[in-house]
Amino acid sequence: MFNLTLYPAKVEIIAKPNATITQAFEVTNNSDSIISLIPEILPWLPQGPDGSVTYDQVPTSASFSFSIVNPNLKLGQSFILKPQEKKQIVVKLKSSSVSDGYFTFFLSQNDIQTNSLQNNSYLSGKIGSHLLIATSETENLTSSFTTTKLSLNPKLKDIFFTPINLSAQVINTSDHYATHSSPIIITKNNQLIQKIDTYPTTILAHESRQIQCFNQTSPVNCQLQPPFWPGLYTVTLNDKSTNYFVFPFSLVITIVFAILFWLLVRFRLSRR
View (tube, rainbow, N blue to C red):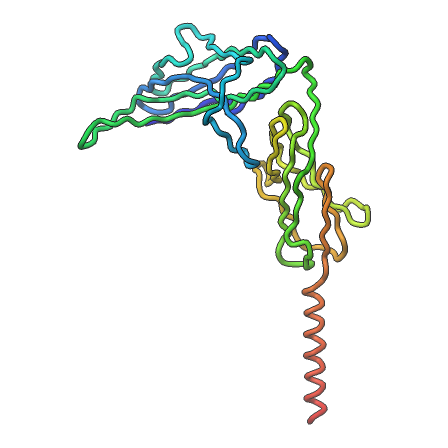
């Protein structure tokens, strides 16, 4: 059974050109069987604003080179991990140009054999850790973000009942990956009403990501929760703003029905 843990799950590295960096990974075989694993490092590219990636037809950049420091262990060659055994694998990397590179350190299993009626078949498993590498002459990288989409649903809201759903998309306009964590600002009459923390999101260079908010420690879709006071509000994220208006529909409807009921009662009493 394929039951591995690999730590860390993601590594972000800032390196100077031609500097040699080492990164340790810890793999644990949580199963009761011996596992044969093959280490490999594959490049990837982002695919869409939801954080998806693709490995299809991604060329390997000559600017980045990788090897394994452990003796008797090489990329592309299998090694054995005993039941409940923990092993540290140290990867050495070097980048020769000022650019970003995105890779995944994979451990692949290809030795689980099953018997079928017609022929033998093999099951495989794979676990990986993302490597985000920024090569720069300085370690203090500057970041710049622009909000490309900021929408609210609905924009005309009652003071009670359902929340307002907020959707935001942010692009990283800098030349290196960076973490976006700017809060959502809500104001009314130029007065601060609320700050909503966004979930820290790593955005690759010149790529966009859908922004989410906090639910204690987990990312969730952003929402503005009722009740609301009537008036015009402004929602701002980075350099983009949009408005929503709150009107006491439910209160007005309740008052109208109360008046109509009172008039009906008065009318019937007068008829008697």
